[in-house]
Image 1 (tube, rainbow, N blue to C red):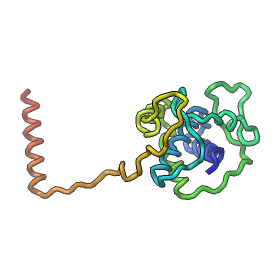
Image 2: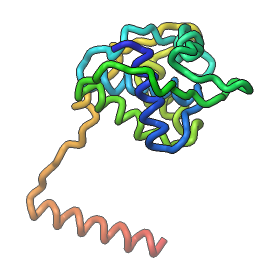
Image 3: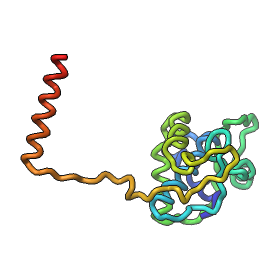
Image 4: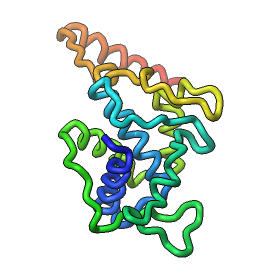
Amino acid sequence: MDMVDLIVTIARDYKETVGIAPAKTKLLKLAYLAEVYYKRLTAKRLTGQEWVFWKYGPYLWEYEAMISNEAIFLKPDDADEFYPVEVRDDYQTREMSIVEQNAVNRALEHASDDLNQILDFVYFDTEPMMKAQVRGETLDFDSVMPEEFYSVKEYRIDKKQGQQIVQKVRKWEINKKGA
């Protein structure tokens, strides 16, 4: 998938979900999360972009040039470092596959999160950033674990084991109250 199409799709879907255009830092982190989620689902990269560990986590050297393209994006006259990224209505992206859209939707589950929450998640809960050591280093998406690694496994216990667990918990609660 083309990186510009990914950014456009996330920016449009974000605005539709939240009601306002995303700030450029948040948009970039959501694009990174879409890459991570796609890798978990397919074991393949969503885009061919080279992500690096930079100031606020994952970064694309080409990002500023991408969102400065006035044929695709609207830039406010008073744009600062955190301006909202708006997409021109007439720009068309290619149709996404179901898996691509799924990865984008999972990234957009973070849309209403505060930027600091997203940054914490990106830094401390995604494998490429957890593995990164030096600013400027290329992020390793081969470190992303497959979806199955994160799935909750169902454990079955027989009735006797269940009763033993309940008894131990009750005993623990009684001891805790007495302490």
